[in-house]
Image (cartoon, rainbow, N blue to C red; front, side, top):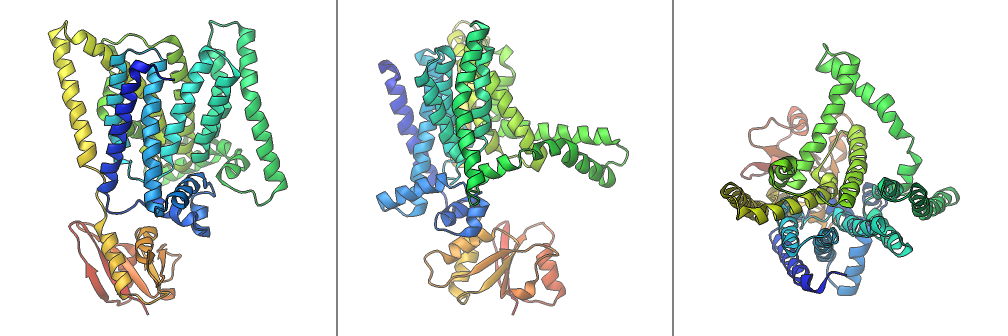
Length: 491
C-alpha cells in the first residue's frame, strides 16, 4: 500500500486523470475504426470477431459495464478506458514510490505521466491497449517486490496482473515466459537460490501453458489470437530465413539494384530498428526521449541497482517483441512501443527530481530547469488542444447514406468502410453493407453505390479512375477543407 503521507499524490493524480479523460472524450466527434470492430464483435458480428482475433476480453468488459449501468456501448467503453488510464497513472506513481523515491520524485512522476502527449491523445480511443499498458505497470510493481523479496504472494500478484495484461494484448505471454529469467540477474544472491526462484516462477506459466495447449488439442473450435500465435510460433524463424530475404530481393529488383543481397537485408533490418525508435520517440515524446538520451548532461544519480536490472531486462524483452513484429509485418505504431516508453519514463522522473534539487545551486542548471518546465507545459497544452482531427467527411457521407440509400443497399468504398457503415447503420431501421474496394479483386458491378474519397492536392484514387473510365457520373459531391466524398450510383 502507498504510504499515508503520499496518498494526496495518488488522489490528486487520479482526479486529474479522470478530468483529462472526460475532456478528451467530450471533444471527439467520432470513434476510431478499431472501436467499430470491438462494438460489433461483442454483438456477434463474425467479421469483426475475426478482425480482433477472437480476443474478446476487452469488449466483454465494456459490454458488462453496458449491462450493469445501462450506458450505451460507446459510453461504456469510454468509462472503462477512463478507469484503466487512471489505474495506469496510479501504477506508474506506485512503481516510482517502490523504487525509493522522495515526495518530490512522486510529484515529478505524476507530472510526467499526466503530461505524456501520446497517452492524453489516445484517452478517447477505444483500443484494448489501455488495459495492456495499465496492467503491465501493475505487474511490474509486483515483479519489483518479487525481485527484492521472493514470496508466493508477490509471485501470485505478478501472474494475476500480467495474465490480465495478456487478456488485452497477447504479446503479454512473452513477458510471462521470459521475465522470470530476470531473477537470475540478481548476482547479490547465491546462484542456487536464483535458480530455485526462477524455476519456481516458471512453474505456473508452464502449467497454464500446458492447459492451454491441451484445450487447443481437444477443442477444435478453441481458436483465438493466442492460439494462432502458438500454432504459428515456428513462423518467427521464417522471418529471418524467408520473409526478410524475399523482401530484400524485391528491394534490389525495384529500388536498389546496386545492393548485394546481404546489404539489402541489412537495410531492411535497419529500417525496422529505425521504425521502432521513431515510434518510441512518439510515444515517449521528443522532450522526455531527449532527457533520457542526454541523461549524462542531467545531474541525475544512478538508479537503484534492482531498478536498472528490471528496467533493462524488461526493455530487452520489449525490444525483441517489437523487432519480431516489425520484421514480420513492417508496420509499427506508437501504441506498440508505449509500454516500453512508460518503463523508460521512470528514469526521466528521477532525472528531473535531481535537476530540481541542484537547480538552486547553479545558475546554468536553474535556466535548464526553467526551460524543461516550459517545455512540459507546452507538451501538456499541445496534447489537449491538438488532439486527432475528426474526419468530418465520414459523418457527412454517413448522413447522406441514412437520408438517401434504400434498405439493404450495397456500397463500395475506398476509405474507412467500417466507420462509414457504423454511422450509417446506427439507430437506423434500414441497413447497408459497406465493402472496401480492392483493385483487381472487387467488381463494382456487384454493388449499388460507390463512395469515393477525394483529397485536395492528391491524384484521383484507383476506384475513381475506374468509374470515370466506365463513364460513371457522380450523383452527389460532399466537400471538405482537405478531403471530401464523391457518390456514384452503380446500378
